[in-house]
Figure 1 (cartoon, rainbow, N blue to C red):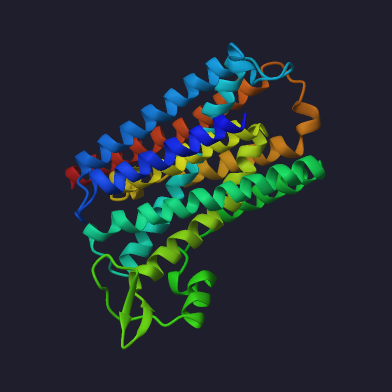
Figure 2 (figure 1 turned 30 degrees about the vertical axis):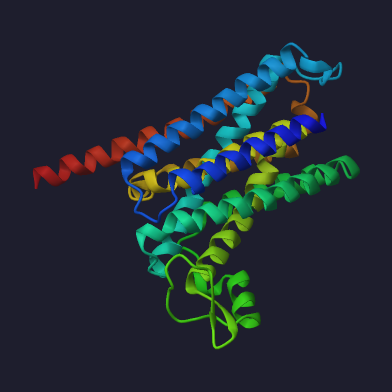
Amino acid sequence: MIWLWIAFLLFVFVMLALDLGVFHRHAHEVSMKEALCWSLVWVALALACGVFVYCLYEYRLWGLIAPGQPTGRQAATLFLSGYLVEESLSADNIFVIAMIFTYFAVPSSYQHRVLFWGILGAIVLRGLMILAGIALIQQFGWIMYVFGALLLYSAYRMLTADEAPDPQKNPFVRLVKKLLPVTEELDGTRFIVKRDGRRFLTPLAIVLVSVEGADVLFAVDSIPAIFAITDIPFIVFTSNIFAILGLRSMFFALSSILKKFHYLKISLSVLLGVIGLKMLLKDYVHDLPGRDYITLGLIVLILGVGIVASIRRTRRHAKAGQGT
């Protein structure tokens, strides 16, 4: 199955190369229309991957799927569940990234480049964390209970957090500033400049470190969450990576309106809590009929309720404002 992994990674890096080298060669401000188009492209590619996963498992293509593995419908359900969880958890990450860009006063035309390299780094980091998670689960079955407890704590922390994190207090940023010299001003889209024979990081590099650090912190929630759905390596990795690939365009499409989804954070907290409970009760729900379909249904229901409630609240406040 190694060639299948190689083919998927090649596809990812070809798409990223086209993104930066062809469609975004020159720094520019990403419009809402462009962001929405790219969001649709990444969602369509993710759904196409879901269809491929279905065919791979349903028809046992190329003899890659051993007996006893899920059916095509089950595998596609697991992929879609994982993708929805990872994509929804990215919404909170979008808010933090927007705050980082605002804090460091990053021009809109430079933001795409930062997110491109940030997502490239996130793919590598997530891959390593997924491999580590799979190794831990295979070696220590009880680690699932630790992941479950971690998700419950994350749900509580997300629900009760009042303040956004301060980028200057990010441990990764503080470490980089302690070890390496940093200039005071931006130098276009460059991350490293040479002055007086010495190499300096630019503030844009610090922004990149902040974005990478934020992704690592969010991965602490998202990686255990995907393992609550499935531990099949290919499904875990592909669903996670497609969610990351869509993050950049989703940021430009949603960052300005995300605050209007007032109840979305509550939905995400409930979602993490439900997934955490599922991990803690895995011995009891393992043989539950239609377990995977119930999980997918709960994910859609929880997110749908949060989105609909937020839209209704926004409309109600808009009508109240017109009436005054």
